[in-house]
Image 1 (cartoon, rainbow, N blue to C red):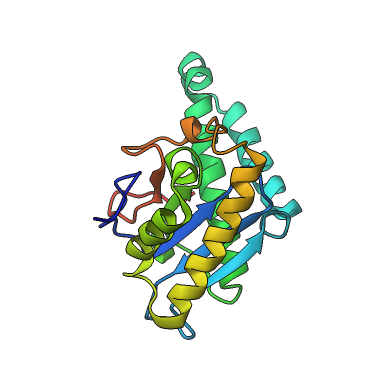
Image 2: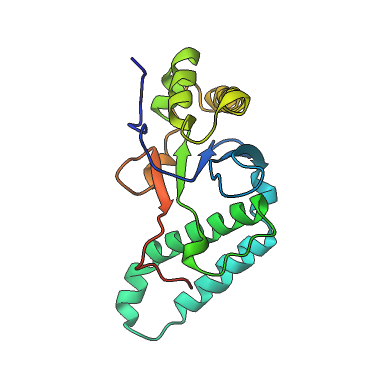
Length: 198
């Protein structure tokens, strides 16, 4: 039986982002089949994704939030949640811009469903075979063949480095910052009719 430490199997996402809290790399698994050269996986450096443009955009939007006039007390109380939403939105835009620089993102409908996998806690306590088996199950709906094999090898190697950095998986503080139904795998963008693009 396959070990599934985050109850992740069956998650429906177009793109999965694998985050290693103590490393400078993220793995992007893009399972979209309606775009040329997909599906694929790619290793990105965080400093290449979160450029000055990312920080400027977050800063400008946060400045606007601080200066809003309506409901001043409620505005201050809601700032942490709104800032989290801004960072997620701009972070997603930055990843997609790096992945597809020529595809415009002009409306919420342009954003694919993206899931976030944070490699901490139970994932780092799995043995190598158990982790690989879980990764195959998680990504088999998005990738296949040699792409899937290479992706699993890459994520496993980065997970081993993360394990070394966190002394065998004791660095789960970042996971507690991820909101949603599952603390290890959270949908950070779900397209819906009620979405507002700002």
